Image (cartoon, rainbow, N blue to C red):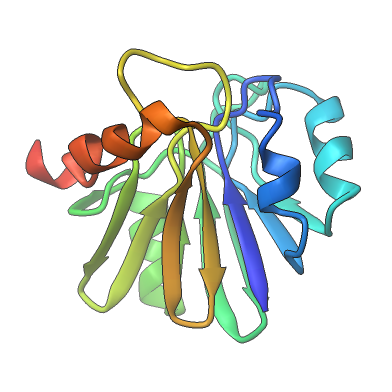
Length: 168
């Protein structure tokens, strides 16, 4: 089972997303979608599970649980940090475990295991912001990886990885 992970498209679907997600079984969008047209395009590739972000006329605080191919996901837009969870996220994890917490909002790539749970932010697949990477993610079995959508983002993924933990 291959799960494509995307966030922070802000109304722009990078042209490489269709190729990268061509053979996925499901797509998870972690918010700041930027319009139904983005979800329609993703649904042409695979079924989509999405949460709304703070730029989607929502607060970005939804917590959605989904099991896909045996992988227990908790999906939210605003975490904000793996070591400083929002109260609703922490309560949901206490109530039922998750294998992977997928989140967005920061536009920063994240892939870290904290207390036995993987926290994954694919970074932004939308408009380029600062020197952050433009990327998506892929979950396949126990492998959870980032995929850069352009050459510049390869180095940016390394430079920006897991900053949410390094800053506090």
